[in-house]
Image 1: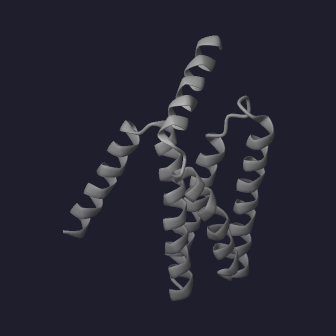
Image 2: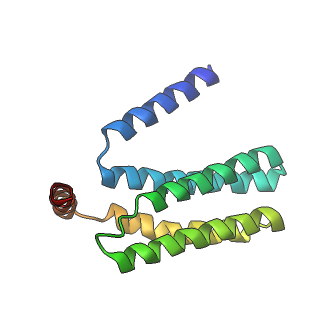
Length: 141
């Protein structure tokens, strides 16, 4: 039963991802990072090192996905700042893994949470403007 539930959840997430607009994809990545870090934290506390390693690898992969989504052509300074922030998060997670402390996990969650909340607060009008800008940029490229 659990295997079927997991398979359904995986298919459901993949379907949502395929149908999602770029804003939604980034939001899903941010939420996925926070959820994965919660799993890592729990694994740490239970001393489940295999689950901890999987969670850390997944979290680092998600951060890589967020970095890949940065378009430096739109606003190079802001894009570079986010790229560096995500890089810092990866370094903090590597330290958390080697030092075996959850403080770095909490720090990364603390850094990502307000970014995610701000991302959620973007109005539909601004999302449409961003989509139009992406479309125009694609036409001129």
